[in-house]
Length: 105
Image 1 (cartoon, rainbow, N blue to C red):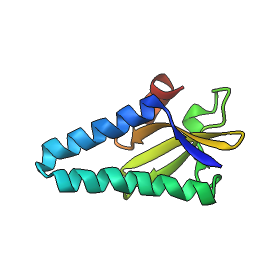
Image 2: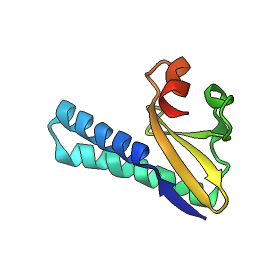
Image 3: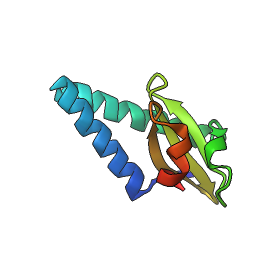
Image 4: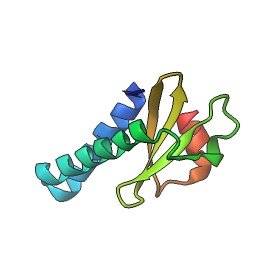
């Protein structure tokens, strides 16, 4: 299996980096967060079903799963497509979960 990041997920990752940089004024801190999220995603290569089925996206035609990362601040929203683990989005856990289908599905 291999990890595939969608453009949307990569944009989310870039926005998280930029936001963290604006809060901390530290490139090092923003880079650590960015790399931590990337490192956490690598766990899916060993355990693709590690994330739970995302109940807020259950009406989609795809079985989306979510892996909580960075101390519960974010979720990697992903699905499995043949031999690919597709990272579809990064969800900020402080957002209203009811809006998840509008943003992701």
